[in-house]
Length: 181
Image (cartoon, rainbow, N blue to C red; front, top):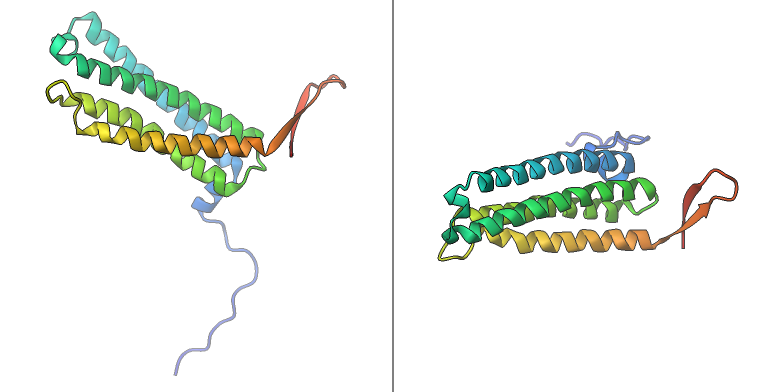
């Protein structure tokens, strides 16, 4: 004989961390601000390291036979720095549009963070091992990251497009509000 079934408990269960991350714009904003600033620090440091390699005329970086490596690492630095700034812009977008659909916002966030990892990593890894002037296998991460970036940008543009901006400057407060179209 089986035990009697207990009726479902009334009341809301505590939200899991994952659901809170997806549903709370403040948590998402803080996460992208923190991620964006740390990513910016990492890739600016990488750029400084590349300048040091250039300044000391390190052959591993500057020889003509290593032109592909130099290009790949410069692209890793540039894409990482730019994507760090895009993460900061995304954080401010989420902050300004708390009404944006949690599902779309969450997918855009995951795709943007994935692109921020994959694109620079693909360029950097592609520059470590060079085969007859062609980048190494790490370069296959770049199109995957690029696709994730396109998805994030599309979802963000659609989310922003659902709202109209109203400026209230006549009363001296200079406030801005966003309303659904």
